[in-house]
Image 1 (cartoon, rainbow, N blue to C red):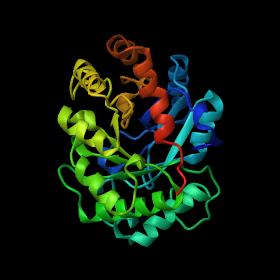
Image 2 (tube, rainbow, N blue to C red):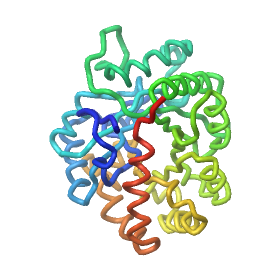
Image 3 (spheres, rainbow, N blue to C red):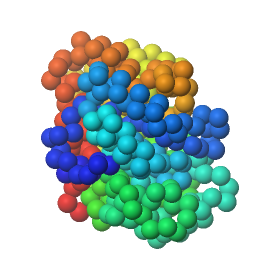
Length: 311
């Protein structure tokens, strides 16, 4: 089963999936770029649904403006399946003195497990009120550029506990696509199966040999800066996907947009917007690799990667 904010669904019901995005977010690392408006979120998701998107994985973690009830409202209004995240981001997203920085592994893991098993805390764990909300379906974690800090390692260990006990996948932010192998080594050392590990933003570091090695380890590659031309042209990502398909790794990739700033949303006057994946990028990808491979990347692999395994 896949756990969505409106309840569990069979994996074959997930459909075409944006594997990494945000609908509501507030972070000190992105001052002035917060977005929390429900109507604008509904507008964005409705547009993406018209283009053929069936599901969206919303990976805003604990402490960064995650809003379970608004996610439920978006899902109900649009018919799009929304998978929400528990877990924690990299150090830069938590101000000095934030409880996430000070919490021991046991507390960090307990709150992950509560989100997965009982429901996400309605106030983002900012007080001690009991959770009564939608359940999370994926665990978020993060590492810094070229390193995993001591605090990030603590949070990765907590994520590993959550995955071991529930079978939930762990989606890890890699800063500019670095530390992928180190993250896999740490999580597998902690007892996480490689097929439960998803590495985000690897397209920021489009190193074919590195990505082939990660795929061979059994982790899932997530390319989620589609349309972010300031990083690299889409043609370079198309080349990378085609090369990995040619090497036999077509079952190891997922796609997303990771719209993590208000300037990336059409509803806030920016771009590329949630429609970009299906309306602009996927038609180009289909010409490169064909319908069958596109289905694997958009449907089959997300259905496997985000399904709860038996712990």
